[in-house]
Image (cartoon, rainbow, N blue to C red; front, side, top):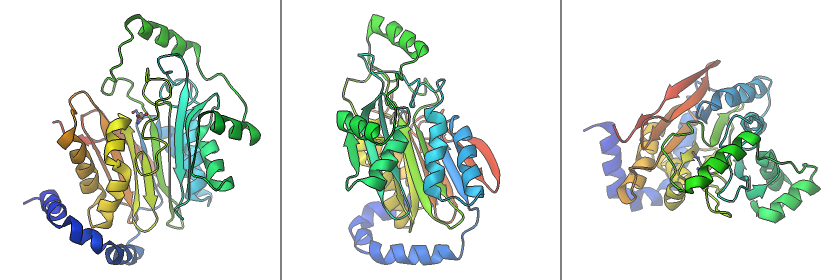
Length: 326
Ligand code: SD4
């Protein structure tokens, strides 16, 4: 029986027992890892736009900056890119023509911040960072998040580019809401990094699914759904149809599976299998990326077409993820 099948058998038979012993196993895990940290620092991120984001994140880490700064600065590259139509400035709007943004960030101490349904601010990830650093809260939403951003020195900007407006007007002719698998091929950016100290952080930022209902929030700003890190174990981030990820709390699940002994690859595959078990996955793409503290990584998607950028051993490269649907 393959390792993966053994692992799945183990987890489905022994879930209760495994969870009960998780405290013991997590401390064993981190002790074991202290001796085997190779392939670090490591930076991993979703889709083609991840390549440039990784470059930026690596530049910071190489210069001794912490992972939390690297992940924030890395995804800001994507947020600022008007050609990326699914993140930040230039993102495709909701069905009423509003660009509304979701983002979250988490550091190696378990501290985190997030914003959802945020309009007119180009860098939601930096607002999320400020929520994390300067407030007693984890998430600010909508008008409250906007006012907080303005008070903290961010500027109000029109994020709907002419290109995105044109595309929206075309969409209005049929007004059909049906996310198409990989159609943009450069969706949400989720980025995870382990720095020179061996500390992990993660960031995730998106304009969400194009043509969504006004007010809709996806998985990307939800800690544990769109992204989660635990400095004892590793981290995970998600891309694709956020509703499916939220229903299974995918990133948290995958980190917990790694705590129980799964490799990042096994954990991502199990994360996808929880989605395809109960949901109509035929027209839905979801991709997961995970890393552990040993510098191992995994990636898995429901359908082919999900690629990611991996920066390890000083080299940045694009890799095609394996998929459930062959
Ligand atoms: C969302 N997960 O809002 C995001 C969108 C995305 O690939 O990742 N698209 O549901």
